[in-house]
Amino acid sequence: MKPAEFATLKIDDKEIELPVITGTEGEKGLDIGMLRKQTGYVTIDPGFMNTAACYSKITFVDGERGILRYRGIPVEELVDKHLFIEVAYLLVHGSLPNEEEKVEFSKLLNRNSLVHEDMRHFFDHFPRGAHPMHILSTMINALAAFYPNVDLLSMKEDIELSTARLISMVRTMAAMAYKKSIGEPVVYPRQDLSYCANFLNMMFDSPVVPYKIAPEAVRILNILLILHADHEQNCSTTTVRTIGSAQVNLYATISAGMSALSGPLHGGANQEVVEMLGYIERTGNVEKFMQKVKDKNNPARLMGFGHRVYKTFDPRAVIIKKECHDFLRKMKIKDPLLDVAMQLEKIALSDDYFISRHLYPNVDFYSGIVYRALGIPENMFTVMFALARLPGWIAHWKEMIGMNTKIVRPRQIYVGKRCKTKL
Ligand code: ACO
Image (tube, rainbow, N blue to C red; front, top):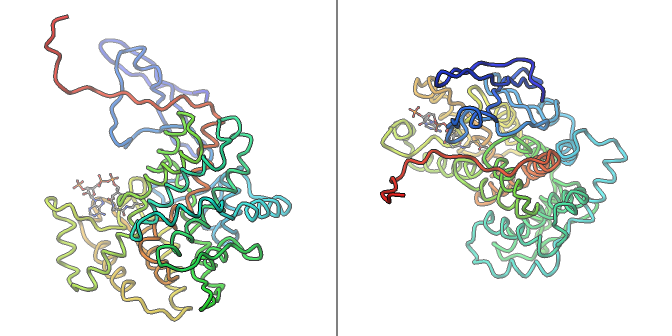
């Protein structure tokens, strides 16, 4: 991007000009690409608290104003009017599909929904209690062995196919992993069902108790998947862009993103939230728990609260909270964890500790309660997040490859032992 202005940096009696880059929404950044060459200095920013690692046209987040848009469209509008697969198409291709493109994409998803029969045997050899995230990231990595055209050129040319394979097949794998974990026969995908209805059916249908697909369940699952579909340079997406920059194949890259997502400070938080709410519900001591999460000497945190970017309400949490209430009411489900969540939120939002640090509920605070109401077990919550995030990861991989990005290789400041050997 061409800079329209420059900032002056004075360093060691030298003045250098740093290009100021302005994004389409007015965000400003200093381009320090030439800093080391010109001055010998590098910048230090552990955790990338203040570093824009790339240019991107995919998602816009304004953490101060609580805004989230995919390809310029507010997420509120997308959940209102669109299906998850349309949003997936939007993220990967840059615009919503027209009718013809939608039909073609659906056909491709349908054709790629079956898991290779030889891969099915892998599921038999994981220990029964294995976490589905571990199973799934392993299986995704294995895709490169089953569909070996994974050199960069083939993957770039076959992006449609790889996208469909990942979005559709990984959904089948996720349901399969669950069925295996409970010792039930696997349910195959059906071409007459939508993406979300198909997933619910593969999860819950059984030869002895047929599953009745409730339209309300399909609707809320669609919303949850859209809300989690992308969130610009979060930890797992940064992992995808970092690993992808070494021109690793897309499957291995996505598998790495998935592993990053599994961490409790990232996607794993939704499972932790429900465990936390359950613990508070059992022990009944909200005040004591709140003291614990505010105690500097205690590593406990109020899970589902706080965000690196949002310093106000996470717009996704606002939507999920409302939808969660509506869904539980419509399905006549009474979940005591929802009462605990509301109580915690009320206390936190009026507590100076949380107010002064701008800690608000994030996307994970209410999502677990919805997943519980859908009948999805806790150890599958992060898998749900991963299914939703697949289009985002693929879109970032595609964008990064398309820009011929240099291999990601940050610098460091060495603070270890000095060499005692005289040279
Ligand atoms: N509970 C209690 N205190 C918190 C919380 C929390 N959930 N989150 C942040 N804080 C405190 C920190 O202790 C710190 O306090 P200090 O200034 O006195 O040291 C301050 O708020 C800033 O927190 P950081 O950890 O520096 O913020 P950071 O941006 O690095 O972390 C994160 C963001 C990881 C999301 C953090 O808020 C957290 O751990 N939240 C709980 C886990 C969670 O819900 N993760 C899901 C995030 S959304 C997602 O990934 C989809």
